[in-house]
Image (cartoon, rainbow, N blue to C red; front, top):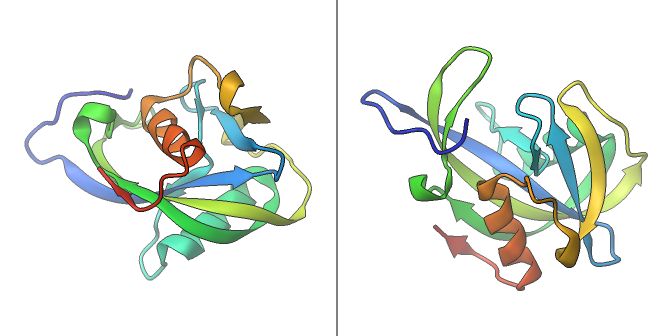
Length: 151
């Protein structure tokens, strides 16, 4: 659940979001199986892994696409923008600090993973209404041409 209140002892978790562009002005979004809402491909940065390595790994795992990282859209940590998450499977509450990176498709075929209910490319004018707030902010920054946002 996005937007939960911060509790004492809440841990900070490093993550990555990936804005995969199709070269036609659209970005790839996934409707996630954990909450049924649309978001960016991405996930946790594992120990010993860079944000770029995590972005490539998570995109491949969740979409079947191999990507090349472009640029840093931004680093997002603002709790008021939905960065406090309660995981539905175990109730853990985490304050997410996500680097959102742009990426271009190198190879692969789009396929669903167990984490995804649906995958699709969306233009700026047709973003899903139930896009999670953290992803919406990053996607809007991307479409505005912003880079290196710190929030």
